[in-house]
Length: 146
Image (cartoon, rainbow, N blue to C red; front, side, top):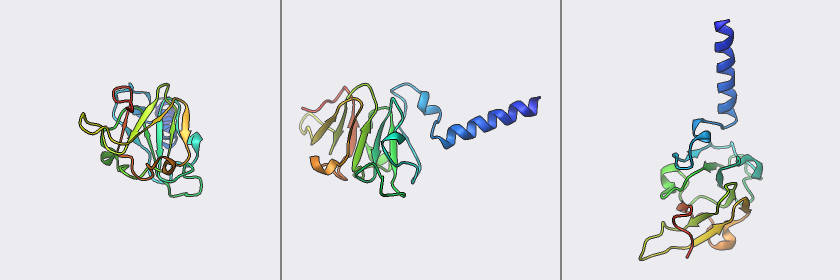
């Protein structure tokens, strides 16, 4: 019986990792950001509920099997720490609050270029907002666009 339970637990863990459901998926909104491996993200439906996602290519990587998807739940002041700085071309916001995409993290002296993405919305092409391959940080309620 012990072997059966161990096998079931291992199988469930493997399925959760394959589906991209790691321990950070159930963490609080202030948890560390998570990123999926290359090639794992194509389409709007790949972005889980209660997360926001940045896509390597416009159109949510649909025509790019090698496109990276980065999945976050909390603000990220430096997307470079996740390998995502200046790479996003489309975005999906499945949070219950807006997210704010910045060309540079805002400071008091320089608010930076900013795009607000409302809750449960997406942007097919960030180039339409002069942010294609230009997003370096993402803020939530503490740094809204000016």
